[in-house]
Length: 307
Ligand SMILES: [Zn+2]
Image (cartoon, rainbow, N blue to C red; front, side, top):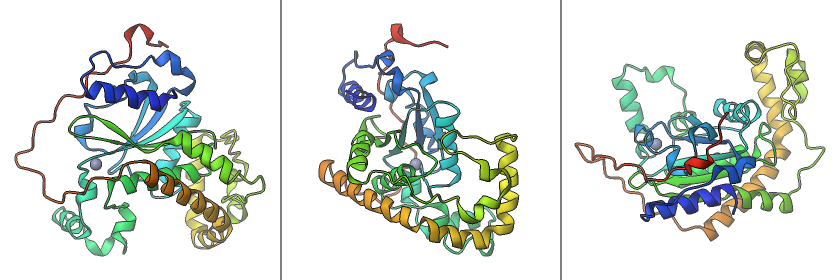
């Protein structure tokens, strides 16, 4: 059994009441630490990382509202890339949750809430949904995030990218995307082309240190990442209009390939995993219910890795 298969197995046993359910992290040291992206919902605070039966030192935790990825080069994508490259993350998991309020908030409700906070609509982008990455289905949102990560040029092709959904009531985890199977599908269906165009070639090549940015080695010669980012930002601000247009043309073939893979993965997922339950649109009960304690699963203490 591979790491996340063992995690889900242990989680299901714990939720079913097995007090001895757990994981031996030392058996999976080649797959640790993991990088997880979850929602900001405070109800999740108590669940991680023990719902995964992992020790805290093997759990790199990224959070944003709705565990949303808005693009293959987005800010969250960069954090995921650095979590793998700098902090040694071996596998990535996008973990959505049931009863996500981002999912339940309509565009009109969001605009009302922002207006109540004094936010001026005229200073917001035209397409609010797209800008905030709003979504209507937790599972679809996870599928989309996994597709973006899997096809991002910032993530190595051998890193499994999983999608999971955690039940906010029970702490139970379910597969949405099995990243091991996605990797197999991808390598057999569309072996990566050695001469695929880089989304950074062309106009971006003229941007300072960025032209020396070697993806495989995460090199920023003579510059710390923060300094390089500042230079890139300045340069991008100047060239953004023209660059965006050219990049879009250049990555079109890559996006096409990515969409093929994404479609296959989605079809596979739809066929092999249970359909989501109907989404309840009723508002949260008031006053809020007490959240149950997370399931009592812990890594086996004697197998904790230190240092
Ligand atoms: Zn949420």
